[in-house]
Amino acid sequence: MKLSEIKAELDKLNQVTFVLPDGSYVPEHFHVTEVGLLVRRFVDCGGKLREEKIINFQLWDANDYDHRLKPAKLLNIINISEKMLEMDDYEVEVEYQGNTIGRYDLGFNGTDFLLLNKQTACLAEDQCGIPAPKQKLSLNALTNNSCTPGGGCC
Image (tube, rainbow, N blue to C red; front, side, top):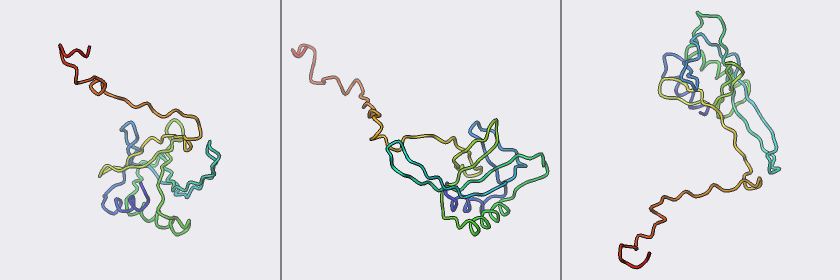
């Protein structure tokens, strides 16, 4: 999700909830401890220089059980961060501490923000020697439909 999409959804919500990939919820007393602009420069396996910019929300589950982050408060945090960091409308990822620090893509189901597992990918497949996926054909496509019993084709 892009930052503008998150802001639009927050305007419609009464509460902010995040759902982990396993279906469990981030405890409702979470804090957003930082909003950051991350710039990553790297060279892919094909030797091409690349740059990625994303916005990062860090969620933290403190033992502050009375804390509830309201949508207006999160919007205020985002607005301040946009001005101070001069952020554009980039994709947002979320960091959350489970067994280790997890980094997630973000989705929305109409009620809850969804923490989605991130996936790796080769950015230079044409230069890595990765074979192209084989085309799958159905058995029906391989049979010669012109053969009939007694037709002499077998």
